[in-house]
Amino acid sequence: MNNFLENWGNAANTALGFFWMALWAFILGYALSSLIQVFVTKKNMQKTMGESDAKSVLFGTFFGFISSSCSFSALATTKSLFQKGASFVSSMAFLLASTNLVIELGIVISIFLGWQFVVGEYVGGVLLILISWLLVGLINPKSIISKARKKLGEAKKEKVDSKPISEKIKNKTNWIKVGKQYGMEWKMVWKDVTIGFTIAGVISAFVPDTFFQTLFINTGEGQTSFGFFTLLEHVIVGPFAAFMTFIGSMGNIPLAALLFGKGVSFAGVMAFIFSDLVVFPVLRINAKYYGWKMSLFILFLLFTALIITSLFLHYSFDFFNLLPDFSSIQILEQEHFQLDYTFFMNIGFLVISGILVYLGFFSEQKDISYMKEMAPKSPLLEKVLKYLAFISYIWLAGGILVKYIFNF
Image (cartoon, rainbow, N blue to C red):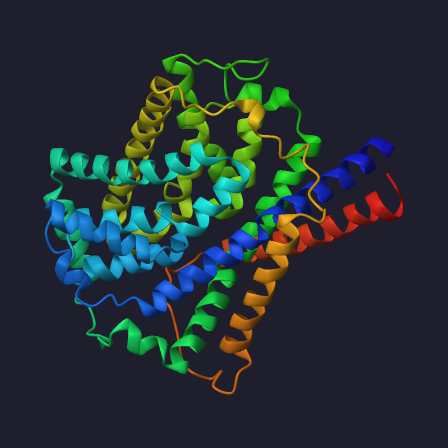
């Protein structure tokens, strides 16, 4: 019993410590994302993405980058662009860029995993787009694309705000929209982040290394080199491990750091991080939008691109002797709560967060309408995640009491 209580306290302390490490990065990332989405115009987006050539794919990638968002928001925007005339290839480029070439994700990865994984994330995001483009060209699924467009029907016409950014910045209404967007960003991810960091703490305290050595073959015991079939198993198992957590990429980063610390290959960890678009909720939403044939084709496309990209990154980094060392991930040994740069960064960004929340929800003009299109989530899954998040809070509170009040 004493052993369980000690592990419980350590699990809660680790989970909260992980979140404290990343708090300023979350605030910075979502603040930047909110600013970009309100002030950067998307005028003529679908017009510039109407072909399947390099220019359209480049525009799709660029617009995806400046529209960085959670998977459900990215799915809804992708559907709208495709419905308004964007080509399938440029729409997929937008989807992949808006979920992988993400500012806030890169910052959090740098904290938990280091610069090699940040480079892998951004280079890998570009590779995912290029490989998907190549696969679509080789397969040429014209009939599937045509049926998907027919299922979507005609797009509604929308008003376009063509004012320059310099003029938008001076308008207080837009800053209120930034505050609302910032609140919406947190609303979209709070359950995923809560559950993800809690699971990371539980795994660090309760799950033995032998579990990971069974799940990801040929790991542990100082293993630093991997054969092709070992890497292939890692990049296939990685997405399934991500699916089992039921959370998005932001909440999965501390879990990715734990996997790497347990000896999982660079390729396997990158596949784990890239997996937010090949899980069942995304498959279901795409089926609702485009039909099951197109949804399964997108799944095949992204899963194949993910495997090729993860393997390519691993061998490329290995060739240039840039593969990160497992021993470099010391997040479990770190003292999380101390008076260091993280403390002052968190305090500063919490002030910024408070200002944005005030502007969006408590200022005199708080009633200004601002809505962001979201993909239809499963009510049952959202309810399950909500209850799991509240259970996580109870677990964390109990663990902290056990560790610091009862001294286990």
